[in-house]
Image (cartoon, rainbow, N blue to C red; front, side, top):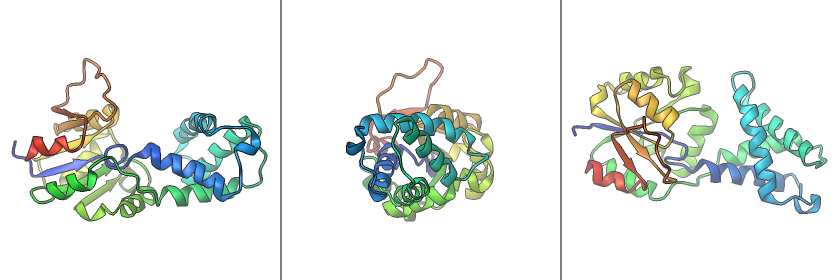
Length: 231
C-alpha cells in the first residue's frame, strides 16, 4: 500500500471521550460537595440531562471559552433538575481539571502505537481546544508516539475542512497517497479525508451500520486489527 504515515483522530479513536467526560462530570460534583442522592437524582438521569444541554451550548464554541461553556451546561442541568448550589464556577473549574487529566484509552492503544511506531511516522488530527487535547494525550502517556499533533483551534480550521488535512500533509511533507487516516466519525473523519484523497480506515467501535454512500477504504472494529492491515 505504500503508506509512510498513519494519522489518527483522537477522541473515541485513541481516547475514550465518553468515559473521560463522564469522569469529569461526576467528579466535579463530588469535588464540590454536591450529592445527587441527597437531591433525589440518579447518575444516569443527570448525565442524560447534562448531555442534552452540553450539546446545545457547545454549538456556541466560537463565542465562549471552554470554561464558560461548561459553566453554562452545569447551570442549565442543575436548574432543570432543581438542584440548588452556589458552586457553578467551581464545578466548571473542577470539570476542566479532571477532564484534562483523564486518560481513559480505547482498548490496545499503547500496544498498537508501539508496533506501528517501528515502521511508520505517526500523527494526530483532532478538533477542539489545545488546552484539552494536548494535556489529555500527556496524561495518557501517548504523546511521544506522534511527530505532529494538529489541533483545530491552533490552526483555525476544523474537520471535515480539507484545510486541516492539507496543513498536516504540508507539515509532514507528504502526499495524500502516503497517508492512512484512522477515525471513528464519518461526518468529520471520513468526509475530511475523502476531500483530500487520503485513504480512510473507519474505526467502527460500536459496530454501526454504514450509510450506503460511505465507502471507507478499510473498516475495523478493534484497533488491534489495524496491525493486520498495514504490517
